[in-house]
Image (tube, rainbow, N blue to C red; front, side):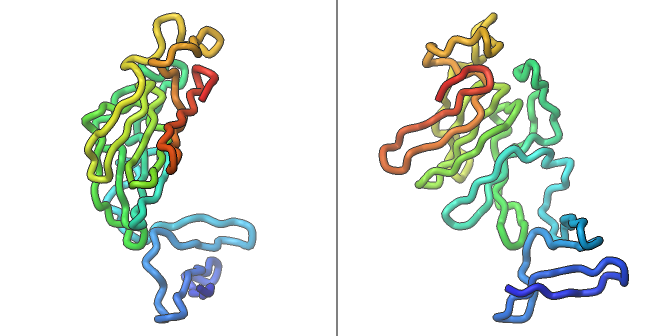
Length: 202
């Protein structure tokens, strides 16, 4: 692709990407606006179907084999990082599948879980979507249709008095303490959980 300059005004030209195969700019979710030689910003020009307020802070992004983007977001809820399980429950779907060229929302899901602090997201070799929540202290596995397939970690997370990292019990295999991320080995199927905000282990 080649850069093409178009004039929005004399002080702030726009740089857009032009596809040399058809001479038209591809439908991307963002284009780059140049305000000066050193200042850049992203300007949305495609309606994604979700406002910034609806989506809130995006904690992670994955990509399905068909190219759909998986966004894991906090829906405008601000985490209580000191005591994350006291964070307000998210009432909307925090998992959103987005078309990478049009920005269209294909589907969303996850509200039934009652997420608190969405964090890590991972797409495995068979397009299952794995996520962690540091407020619920759990790991969840969904298929791409949004059906919950597996939950890892005892509900409620660490036992009373074990919440702080210096007091946590790394030997308890049933309880996570603010799990940050998850990954799955495509060959063995082994699940790796980065249980490192409260505990100090994988």
